[in-house]
Image 1 (cartoon, rainbow, N blue to C red):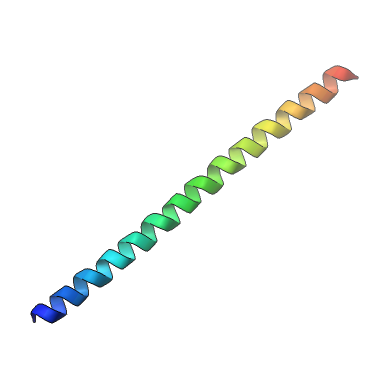
Image 2 (spheres, rainbow, N blue to C red):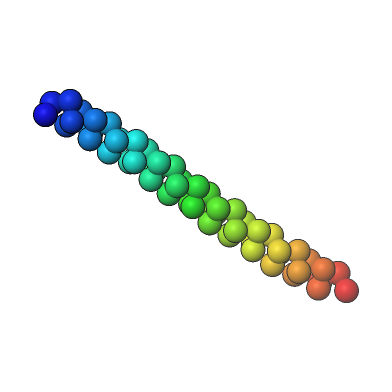
Length: 51
């Protein structure tokens, strides 16, 4: 049973690391999207003022 418990713990740790990595990637993508939106809006405003 000890071996089974150790394997289960190792698998849970791997799953946890994968989940954390996925969450980090989602956060990074969200931040990048926000940056793109802000830059786009800023450029639109600059172009409109220059006309």
